[in-house]
Image (tube, rainbow, N blue to C red; front, side, top):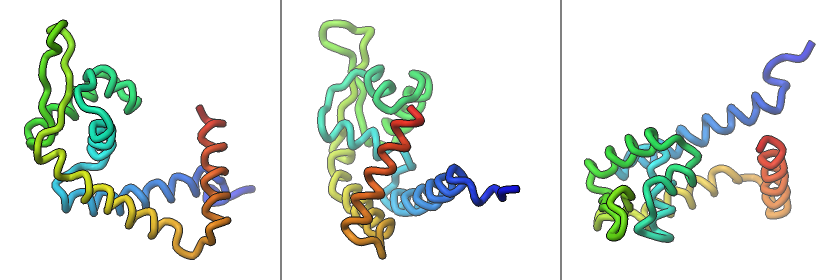
Length: 140
C-alpha cells in the first residue's frame, strides 16, 4: 500500500506550503499579506480595472475580492473610485504607497525564485516549468 507522501499531490502540497510560508514572511516585512501582491501585480500592469474584473482574474468570488480590496484600501495600497460613466462599476487604482511597492515585491519574488530552484540546472528549471504547466492544464 502506498504511503501518502508517495503521492505526487502530497509533494505538490508540501512545496506549495513551503513556498507560501517563505513568500508570506517576506511580504509581511513589506506590510503585505500573501495574495495582495498578485492584485498589485495586476494593477502595476493596468490601473483602473473594474473590481469585478480583478475578482475574475484572481479566481475568487466578488465578495472575497471586496474584502481583500477593503483591507488594501484601509492599508493605503489602493483606491476605489466609481466609474465615470456607470456608478455601479467600481474601478481600482494604485495609491502612491501601492506604486512604491512594485520593486520591493518584485525583489521578493526574485529571491524566492532563486531559493526555489537552487541546485537545478537551467535545463532542469525549464523542464520543471514545462511539467508544472502541464500539470496545471491537466487540473484545469
